[in-house]
Length: 252
Length: 300
Image (cartoon, rainbow over all chains, first blue to last red; front, top):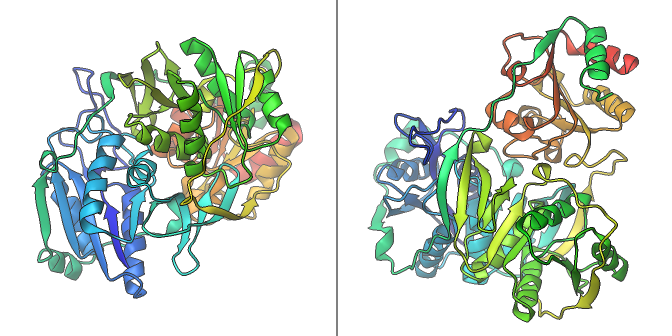
């Protein structure tokens, strides 16, 4: 089995973002960037398949600026075999949306013919959570989203739902899988593997050279910060809390 | 317009549809005739299309039903609550029409302009969508539920051919609980790493039961294995906005705050006075949760 994973370079999850002065986007200057946490889980799942001798090759694909090559290197250091970097100057948090990304990934899938495509369930910058299902539709293949466990032998996926989990059986491969939090705990790349990853191949080409018509239906007119909550008060004890909840907030 | 009858919060999409204007049609995929009829009774609904199927309601099936309904009588907006099924089906249906979905809408500003959160709600984007058919998912906490009565929607069947490549249902392990659903509960009691173990969450369950509320958790508590993932409140879990949110032993990481900061009244109980949770709480109690929670339960 050959596996293709998507990896996205995003603002690190621990950074509190700020809106840029022109109110058109979030300020990315001098902000720590990392691999999207859900993409890390996708990579880990693929690497475990390879360690279990179920996968023979893992290809990590990223669409993003020049610096997204670092994110691919991280995926290679975690255990992916080679990388594909589709370069773009468009901001991947708001200019290049899920439909464009899905169409670009579909093109790569057509060229590489992997058996499984594993993506994160959402990226933590744009927060759309749409790319996996859109990719599956563009390829007309099954989608198994919000995966908590994937069993390729039994062809089943346990999915997170609104009220618990459900197990579904996917009829065929290739299929698209999107990784939810509990799928696994991603490893850290070790120094020897980081050194080894430097020798692995990354195929770089411009995203607009693939002959994919990118159409973005969404234009961001303005980005603004949510209204801050007014500062609350400290109560001295439980009696004080109950009093406030009953008589001030009226919620008890 | 499409929606799925399952949870009460699906009808927040009807409210959002009303804010856009125009006739509202509910697409009911699967389910009984009774279910379809009750969709028609929802206030504001003009028509119900019933796509009958006994198969698994995955993204493929619902998307196929949406496409059939749209082909029969074209819609300007196709939307659902941002439920698990909505998040599964709306993007797939949008891709079929080469459209860009607008996910997690929290405000309708016009027929093509919507506000949605990015970066875990730390930034809000005003988005204009130019697609001929606009695909939206609606954040349930941002809109009221449409009333279950008052509509006069007649039910029509819509035929659709199902995708042979669709996954099939094997089993479900739903949390069997008499408590209200976390996403729609008016009271939520959440625990964090400060709870120390899963056993201690019983304390929160007792309090939640007394207040008719649901139990939630921070990602840290889920990661530590105290409770299952479906209880997770935050950017990577559920977004809730109850009348009362009580955060117990939760420090208040950014990703948790983004899941609960729109709650009407927030109470934080934590022994660390500097914990960031206190910056968003209306009432903070600094102290040992193992003393405070039982005392609170006794006094409410």
